[in-house]
Amino acid sequence: MTLHHLVALICFFPSVFGSIRELECPAIASGHLNSSSITALILARGGSKGIPLKNLVPINGEPLLIRSLRILLEFNRFASIWVSTDDDRIASTIEDRFSSDQVRIHLRPPVLDTTPSIESTQEFIRMHPEVTNVALIQCTSPFLKVRYLEELVEKFVPSTDCVFSVTRSYKLRWRLDASRRGAVVPVNFNPERRPRRQDWDGELLEAGMFYVARRELLLKGRFQNDRCQVVEIEPGDALEIDTVEDLELARVMDNLR
Image 1 (spheres, rainbow, N blue to C red):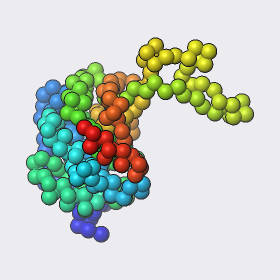
Image 2 (cartoon, rainbow, N blue to C red; image 1 turned 120 degrees about the vertical axis):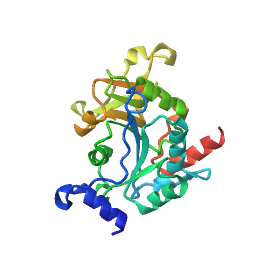
Image 3 (tube, rainbow, N blue to C red; image 1 turned 135 degrees about the horizontal axis):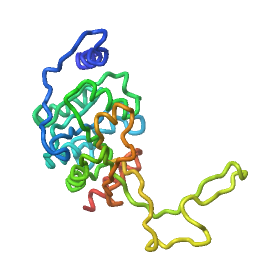
Image 4 (tube, one colour; image 1 turned 30 degrees about the vertical axis):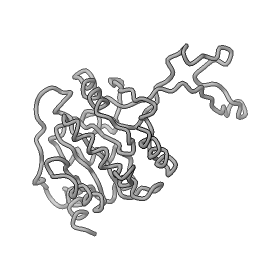
């Protein structure tokens, strides 16, 4: 076990090790909700199963994680930028590229390696009580743009608890109906009146690029509730990298830009 992991375990079990106060704990600036009250967070675990160490895999020479951090720094409106990781290689890569004033590292315990994103986000905010709102940025969405982040913070107003990314789909969906012996039935259209693309608004699908939510909502184990707004991502920017094929497609798309 490395020193980084030991520190993370101590922070994760304060009842055993006593009260821990982090040496570097940035204050969240007061002001309008949709700007400096939001903390940017990237969850970058080292144990990706589909693509080993996926967060550090390059697209045209630039690792996915570094690519996202570059956009966040260019945006320059978040209270602070954090990467939560359980991997020393990821931590070292960040330390080599950025100062601690630019990007801060939160070392989470290895026990969270296989947990859902909401649990890792909860662990982060419990260890950082000064954080009131979190923008979870997914670096596996390689085509993050500053303008999407600008729309995100503009929509995060006092009457809103969450904002997340979506993309529009015009695909006609079917499902297997077990009650009808596996017959396929339409989900979002009437086969007798098949809509043309220009005749309907389509559906909104989660794009997975980012989620911003209030601390209280996150502590309830949720990124979303019925007080959400969305940022629509262009279909060409909505690619998520889950497989080697996705990665190769992202590289081709990046070369065409």
